[in-house]
Image (cartoon, rainbow, N blue to C red; front, side):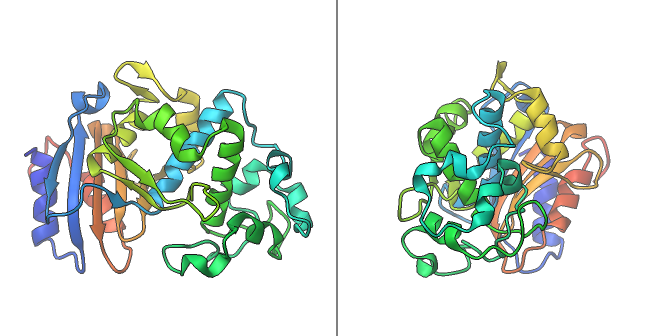
Length: 300
């Protein structure tokens, strides 16, 4: 077990962090992270299933798919959503959708409330059997680009946009472009009743594959000497908080999901850490600080 994982384990077990059931944590560090070696170090705190729902960590993967399409000139941020999904438009669509761009959607500036399509917190049948129609006919609260509301609806819509542009569902597209190239062992993604990948949540992956994804961003889009993402997209998406958000602790950045699922990238240490856990109330800052402030060359 690495020195960092020993330290992390001691903080979880002895650190007094309340109400946390840590399932497992994985680490790629140094040459393993920089060169994209497949073997991540992993420890289990309790026996658990190999794949767990990583909730909103899924949004980072969806944003990455958008980045791939942007770089290939198959999509642009200023495209109007209704032009992309024109064969899916209901008769009573809200008129604001005709002004909504892809950029508005990825920034969640589309006038839908915060709880919209939150299948993790509400009965998934709440929105009927056609989520897209429900969304497009819902009375929007504001013009696109004017207000921010955190919700899962935007990334579900991004999934449909990706499906139209890639000519395949989001999860199939990422198996081809990301999961298989990174050597993911397993991945499954929830779909809506119409078969569209949820995009915002419902992604089930292994913790050791989460750190591979983080290492791809640490390396500027390169994995095992093969470029998978453009360096421009990596820098842009982190700067704008589309795939990862800066933590305010050194150069580190992270992406989290409900119940304390997290990927943390610490460039100063060439380290990527990911964990899967259960905690009734989300409060990831303590663990982010533990991972981001640790230094191999300091006494612990």
